Image (cartoon, rainbow, N blue to C red; front, side):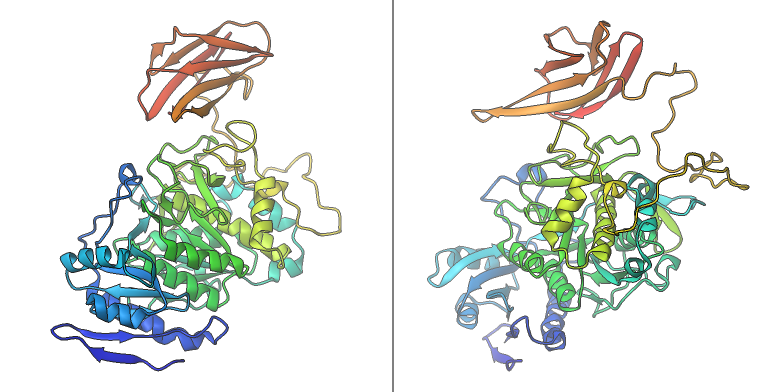
Length: 544
């Protein structure tokens, strides 16, 4: 560990630097660096006065988030730059970046302009804010009496996969780092399921002051019951659910140094210029063999400028509801890899159990799945794990990959455990239990995941008699969309209502019961449809 450099700047705080040794050094050698980050955050972190960039501002390259009054600079002369630019404090990390802290908003803005044209500076960016990806607040929820709290465990085939694992595979330790608001370690779901963690905002404590991280970690622990998947809690977001690129990057680095195999990032922020710093740290983690899973975001907006979800090599997760429909809030885009349950997910709260919705809740389903796959093939690299989950997914939306579901809905029932012995098949009949287990807040038996039954006054129709998706194309910068309708070919009459208004436009008959409807004169947002085909009706919503 190189010596601590200290010197004073006139009229300012002590200017100090910690130069971190190469990644091959012992993790303990880096603790001074993390301690300095905690010290810096304690002195400069805003008290609730946050101004994160909104999704509609994400493409405005001139917009910068100076909330933290902190800049991240790629340079080989960090100390000299810090002194010349008037920073209050600075740190040097092991990736060639210099973190500069300033006292005043006006000072950091002037420094940004100066650094942008300074010789020897490869790049400069603001330490932008990052928040949890959760659109709805937690509410109390009656705990389920089934084997899992989240309905997503059944939908993703978790028990099926675990039942096909060998004893050795189930006993293989796989560590999932949950970089979030921390985890309430005393909760019953984490008994015997946690390894040591850390915190950036709380003097090194990994305890949860918000509840979001506990819920996320609880989903992973819940899904992987009966295995040796362990939770590594890392508190990188404060009690308000807010952090920055620096705190997330520090959490990722700490996780890699301490043996994490999978990292869950149920968080993000919009950054018009993207964070080269955070991207570099996450890419380095992936290159070192760690699977990184990130939530797509909850603004019904593009992931292109949503960090870190925009990183191609990680697994970007969108959200579905219990009907396999895309959640109305879920982001979409070129980087969506897979969809997973994210609506009304029951998991651990700081006390008891709570229900939350968001892509934050979808991501841990995929992190749990990635951990189980790693347990069956520990040598699989991140790309192989990602491909395995994508190949096993249930295709939804447009055929093949699409921007809303990625390659489909997560389903471990379609994934091999790699065992040479024949894998058991489901028995034709299952004896009814003496005391049926029940769903949350219901007296109906829990029979595994299945689409909800139609209301009693609705005539029964064949399942999936009508399927609906949206196909978009971009020509000369203009996006056009068609509603794609697939039915049985029986010559029935097709009638369509959009937003309760009969559709009188052109309906293109593609043959074999397939139709396309041009969506024109519609505002961007969520729209509702009702389709009648003979005696069959289907209703739902789509995003345009």
